[in-house]
Image (cartoon, rainbow, N blue to C red):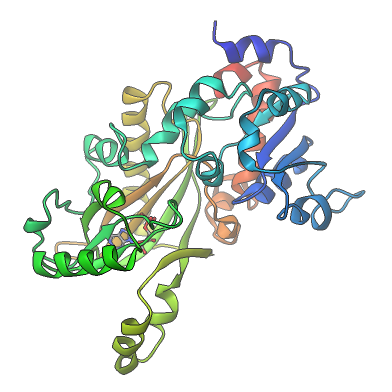
Length: 374
Ligand code: AMP
C-alpha cells in the first residue's frame, strides 16, 4: 500500500480542501475549486501574501481563497508541521511550476517526503528539467513528436540556434541567447562568463537547440484518467520581456537597443490564441502519443493537465508542429478560458483549475480518488 493511500483513507472526502502554493496559477486553481464546491487553501510567503490573504480572500460570495497560511519561506512547505496542517484539512495538493522552483527543484524530496496527496503523477514533474533522464526531450523523441534539432557539441552549430542556459544570479530565470555558429557561440559565452550573467556550471547543463521560426502556441491539455480521454482545454502564447518589447521596436533601432540591453525571455503573462481548425487533429494526435509514451516510461503516466509548448512552422510540404518544451503539470496561463476549445467540449468555457476540480469531484463520487493522486 502506498503511504499516500493510508493518508487518504483517513480523509473525510466530503470535506476536501484544494491546496496550492501562492504563486503561478494558484488563483486559477482556487476559483475552479470553489466553483465545484471545494474549500481552498493557499500557502503563501511573507511579503507576497496579500493577493491571497486580502484581495482574493473569500468573503461571502466574493473571492476564492478560503484559508491562507503564510510562511516565512515557501521551503517550509516541506516541514512536517506544515504538511500535517495540510493533511488535517483533507488537502489535495495541486503542483505548478513555482512549487518546483521555490522548493529548489528538489524532486527527490517532493517524491519521497511530501506526504500530502497530490493531484496528478508527481513522478513526472522532474521531466521538465533538461538535466534529468529520461527528460522531456527523451519522451518527445520516443513519442515520435517533432522537436528542434539539438546540438550536443557547440562546434556543430550550423543554423540560428538558442542556447538554453539559466542565470547565475537567479538559478531559475532564463539567460537564453541566440547564436548561429561556433565562433559566435564562443565569443558570447566568454562575454557572459566575464560579465557573471552565467556560470560554468549552468553552461554544463545548457542545451543548444535549433531556433524554430514560426508561430508559438502552447497546447494546454487535460488527460482524464476517469474517462480515458484527452481534452484540449485551451491555447495560449507567452508574453516575455524584453523579447516582446524589442520585437516591437522599428528594425533600424533594434540593433542599437540590443547592444545596450541583452535579449531576455522572462515570463510576464500569456495571451489566449486560437489555431486553424484543420490543425486540431494533428495536435490531438501529438497529445495522444505523448500521453501513451508517458504511461510506458513513467507509470501511471499523465493524470490531469499538461502543456506542449510548440511552434507552428510553414510548409512545404505543409504546416507542421514542432514541440520545444513540455509542462507536465498545471499551466500558468489562465487566459486560455478566452479560447473556444473547452466550450466546444463542455458547452461552457472551463478553466484548467475548474477542470481539475471537476475530475476530483467525479473521482470522489465514484470512489476513485486513489487513482488520480500520487
Ligand atoms: P522555455 O524556457 O523552453 O519555455 O523557452 C522560453 C522561450 O524561449 C520560449 O517561450 C520561446 O520564446 C523561446 N524558445 C525556446 N526554445 C525555442 C526554440 N527551439 N525555437 C524558438 N524559440 C524558442
